[in-house]
Image (cartoon, rainbow, N blue to C red; front, top):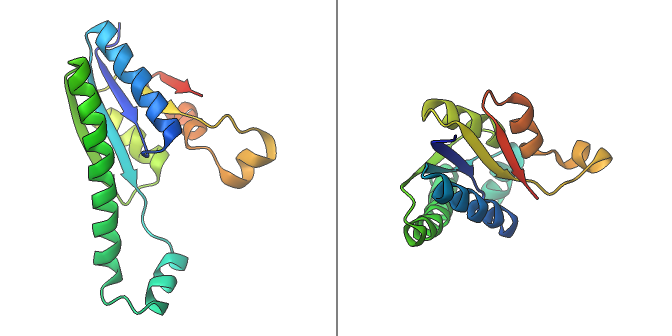
Length: 148
């Protein structure tokens, strides 16, 4: 059925549940998994805050912090995949909006399913906070499994 599953994570507790479900599904189907975490470009407010804090090289500082966070997230997922004996690859995609980066990675890696977590927000909360899972589900050319 599914041979290559893309699992999206931001390292949150909720995303960890989707990671567990995605890896369990990959194991059951004999599929391989690609795990992606996306780092957004930093916004003007973040840049201003770092400038006020007199950080010498704010771009390098930001990139180092994001790379370290991505490495921790992907290492943790890799350990889970190894325990389940699921073949996997990891991807840290930089400077993208999460939904677009997830879809881009799924297409580039020829994944046939995306697994992503959702908070299950509705109405005004979705409008104010946004939902990457909703965007992925709406824009993805491949099926999306949303875990709550």
